[in-house]
Image 1 (spheres, one colour):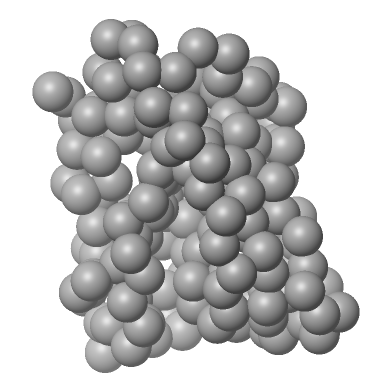
Image 2: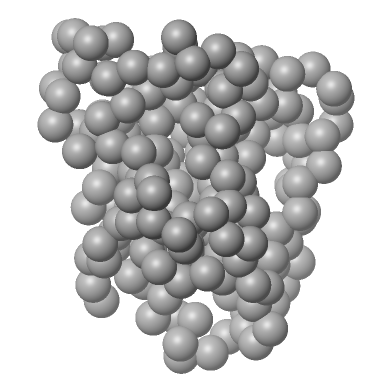
Length: 178
């Protein structure tokens, strides 16, 4: 349908608690999901949350096959997740580099649970229930943070591990994060 503008850090919508989706399988939800998909693909994103395009709803999409922004990442199946809930399976936290389409040009080291269970619904209202770890778990936690008004720099424990992608990873094409 349409590639939408991605809100950048500082926009008030990105700091709000998103509302749950009440009605599934509607034309409005289908348009939102198609716009989110088109926007994520155009930006080479690993995921996108509805608040990032100005819709304060509990909707995230994610998926990684081959992505120039994450060249070493394991594959993550394309998923539409509505009204998600995350539960840590283990208390272990793992630090890893993250970027965000709403924080372009920067990367930071963020601690995340290494092993999680996430539940929610697909666009038709069918239950999704998965247990995942590694990069998949990181992506889900990152995207779901957008639904509670949290951007990855807010999760960082050491801001010395925040920097411009072009400085941190000089061999990469700097335009990949814009």
